[in-house]
Image 1 (tube, each protein chain N blue to C red):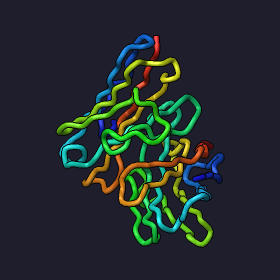
Image 2 (cartoon, rainbow over the protein chains, first blue to last red):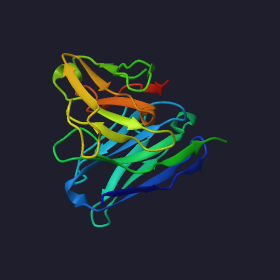
Image 3 (cartoon, rainbow over the protein chains, first blue to last red):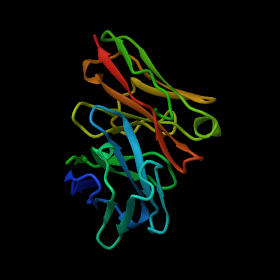
Image 4 (cartoon, rainbow over the protein chains, first blue to last red):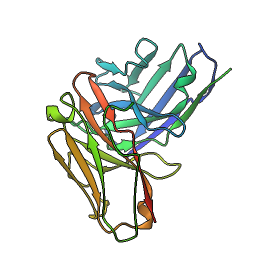
Length: 119
Length: 111
């Protein structure tokens, strides 16, 4: 059974940092591209970042470019999102989501981890 | 402002048919990228509902169907059920952003 479990959410200070993690199980992790998608309270979904299966290629939404860094450890079946220079508008539930091979949709999602940026 | 445009809400009585539109542009749906749909029940993570325009994952009832034409797509729910009350999002890929784009979401209310 495919499982994605996020962790690391919590309260962050404006201008501060947080690191999110997503632990994957139930599939051959190193073959799949992964993403982070977020949802501000009461708002819609927003794609945040993408990482290739090898970890050599990443893409970011303009709203987080230069502040967030996505990485992965295929030996540990996990992806991370390093969030720096946090802003109030980064407050959201952050979901880890898998892309099926050679496709552009998200077939499995984690349960999400909530990030609140406030002083 | 979402890149893909959806109506904020639609409603219908049990058993009725409702449709949700999703309008994009020449850099996403109009460029030939497929459209996918997600259902989000209150307090839960999104769940894949329709992939590659019109395909249902295993376990999704056949009352859900999708289509795509030009720069738009639509999701239809035929025979609306109370458990279909949820938020629905369309999603595609955008070549100018090198990433995924979502619609703003549509809340379906069963009257």
